[in-house]
Image (cartoon, rainbow over all chains, first blue to last red; front, side, top):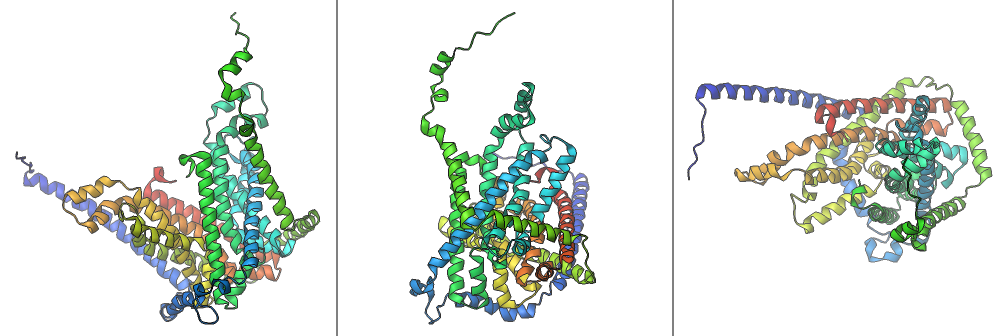
Length: 294
Length: 282
């Protein structure tokens, strides 16, 4: 079987080709201009950030050899040849890791409770008054835009060195982040149950409890678990500014060049983060099925 | 007027045993979980040395600090702060771009529809995961050891830690791409590289561009803090002013960060709309 491919007469073809070429050329010009603007921005940024390729090239060996050094014990042997020597401080480090997880747990839960209390005031469809919604939204924005470690720096001065500052910093940051995500879920609910409950003469609180909450609780729990996971990472560096957890040990080990300690602590942090990742992922899948794992 | 039949509770009970006669274990599960969560919370409060007295005195201190912060005032160091802010923005832009450039080829190796073999994909994925498991601040500490104090270490720290995140996100975007275009290229005789260039990239690039813009935005936030460990930018100034208790300067710096982040937010959301259209914005 043969199929004849119809070919247009050359005059018609020329017009079409012309239009095509013009369209492509226009697109090319746009892309070129955008690329040029972006490269210019990059060059300016490179000057601003004091990028020095010469240092980079001469020192890049240090980066590779750094990993070589942190994989070597003081005696010169490889770390994995003597696990006992490598993890000599495991008791202390494990308890500090526990403290890190506890900091993020308490911080996340406190933030979740307060964010929960605030989010109904910030969602468009449940806010009792526009001015209140505006105020609560700005407050949340402030809480999540200021990085948690900046709060920790300030809280260390107000509340003293120790995990308390870390917990409060994480809690404040979580209020902002969770409050926003919660209120976005609430904005997407079906309003019919709310009307139903209101038509029975229920108060605002009852509406929230019996019409809104059943629709959103799965999404809330999912976001909270995700936030817990993020906060474990955040809590692992809280110690850098003296706000408790494993970070203190790590920063001391890095600054004083205790190479094998650095690798031991890093490995423990990465493993903990993995375990928490997998654990919360499993819990989310278990609680709400596959579709809630966004 | 019709009247509803009186509710026959016995009949209802008999008909829906799973609603009325739930086993005790199912009824107690939720309260028990909440009690457990609350128990750990209280244990945490005790273990982490929370005490009402400490909390209250801290709050008083915090209130005093807040009073000292008003009004925000840069003193005579406004030019230095502006330079530091520029440094921060540069760190975010350069770090994110570097990360995206390096992550793109690696993400191809981590995508299921390009490398079908589990054995090759698994190590790439774990490698990306472990990079992501280490916080940006920790990478900053490492890079400071390598290239010395200053913003360049910050750029490299952001580049490395985003490399892990981008590798994962890009490979997910590639896996979600439509197979039909790729098959079309193959049917017309293209090789594997053609398939990626003409079948995949046109689908994936807008998604990737959106993600990169979003990360530039969130990295402006990260770049403000890596200065705390000495990797340049406005965080360095902020940490210093907090240490010497110059609260008016601290509040001014925080305000500057808020304004800068809001501005970048605004610009990048405009750009994202321009690149991928309003519907695809997540």
